[in-house]
Length: 142
Image (cartoon, rainbow, N blue to C red; front, side, top):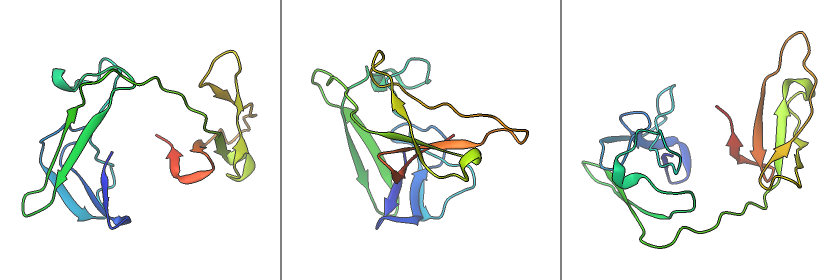
């Protein structure tokens, strides 16, 4: 993740190192670099996080940002039982085969949290990304 000052995409505040963790130097606000720099929190093993930042899915963190001459972003894991995650969102796929018009994905009733869509590849290949709840601010893409 990264921060936006005054909700402006041209005023990003982000870490100086990609996939950074807490208390690392941060820069901005400005448009940012071509390669997105972000802070990393993940409940998945193998993300090279400091041991204190490892947490099971559903864990909650308190994130604190301190502006000033030297900006500081830190977090701490809240000591409570992880919450069960449920996602009742809808998901859309936008792709080159449909001129990037959103198409609703179908939830798989036998696998909660899994959505699917069938598409056909053409000679130009496939380019696509996803939306959550038809919200372009919740764009999911590499």
